Structures are given as structure tokens and as C-alpha cells.
Amino acid sequence: MKRHTKIFFKYWKYGGQDLPECWGCFMHPAVDIHHISGRGLGGDPKKVKDNIYNLIPLCRDCHIKTDKDKSFNDKLKNYLERRINENSKI
Image (tube, rainbow, N blue to C red; front, top):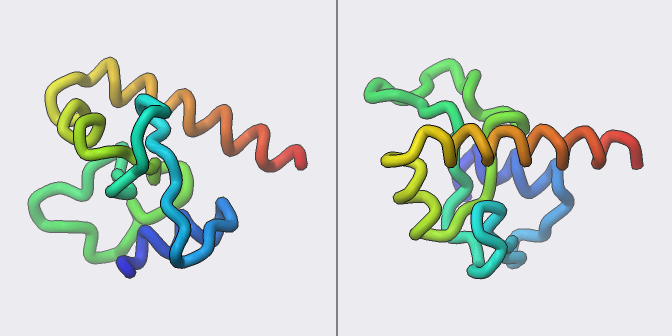
């Protein structure tokens, strides 16, 4: 399991075999933990983008949509921030 996936799973208390739903469409299982702010061509050698405020589970269709639609990425970022804020109140 990739480092950023482990970070996501640990924060949201998913087990290694769990398959979260897509937080983009809520209709399909997520197949990727997406970096909202991309790691760039050189990757992320210092792993600063592997933080819970930048990681969201997406199905393949929604992940592809993030490459083409900046407003969709903004929507995902806002949704993620709301979920984190709600989670921190628990």
C-alpha cells in the first residue's frame, strides 16, 4: 500500500481491506486516493503533499475528471475540508 493511501486509511479509520466509496460521485467504489494538489512531474520527494488535507478517495471516472475540470477539483477540496472539520468535532 502506498504511503499516502496509508495516511488516508489511518486518519479515516479504514482497514486495509476496506474500499471507501468515491467522494466525488458517491456512486462507485474508490479505486484511487487522489492528491487534490498534484505531486507534479518530479513527484513529491519530501512527501509534503501526502497529508490528509490533500487526499480524497475517487473512482476512476472522477479521478479522470479532476485532470480536465478545475472547478471539480475545487468542489472536492471544499468537501474534504468540511469532512475533516466535522471529523475533528467528534
